[in-house]
Image 1 (cartoon, rainbow, N blue to C red):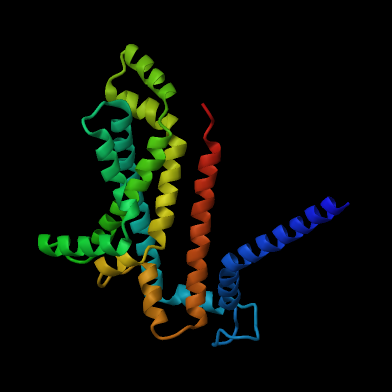
Image 2 (cartoon, rainbow, N blue to C red; image 1 turned 45 degrees about the vertical axis):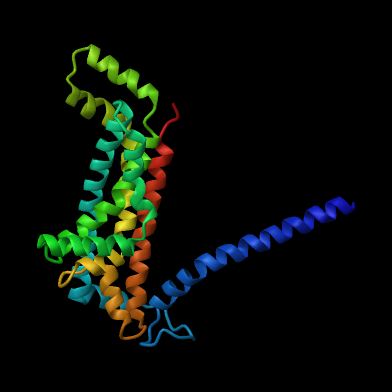
Length: 265
């Protein structure tokens, strides 16, 4: 009887602990979305809504919509470049014996352990020395630098020995190496490739530090949100933040779906 009471108490405490943890994580997001629907000009209680007034204001603001398009373009293009380079690097390390491969793999994944601020400052100094102006292109290169190691790690972890046998069979049937790569390896690795792409888009979409350091006139959405916040909180910034959160959630869900579609060997 006593043990069942203790077990019940533990279950209750575990449930309360889980509620507290999830509340701590998601309560700020709930408040952000809630007050983005505030009808008045002040994002403070009591709640007066719901209203899409501030979402209409965001969509009517040309600077915000331009920044939104810039963010989508930078995220999509930089993620495509990062996942392509990451796939080719993973394929090379998995299929060929290279001298010092362990050290080289460590160097590729090293940016995962370095602060984005340090990477951004380093790129800023490098671009100034090379005469590359601040622009969306410079920010896109920075996003490739931080996302390539992630794509490499995801794809390399999924390259198993069973794929070597399929590739060897294709070569024995006369397929050239480029056909083996495009028609065999890429389709087999498609779930990992898409997972790396969508996760890279998630990180690139809401990345601020590198975009702030490497852009000037054409900015991304996180930088534009920061510019809005300098004048104080208002429901428009809440609406923009809610849109950023919604896109991030969609990308993460697509990433999870790609992982679930991967069939075990």
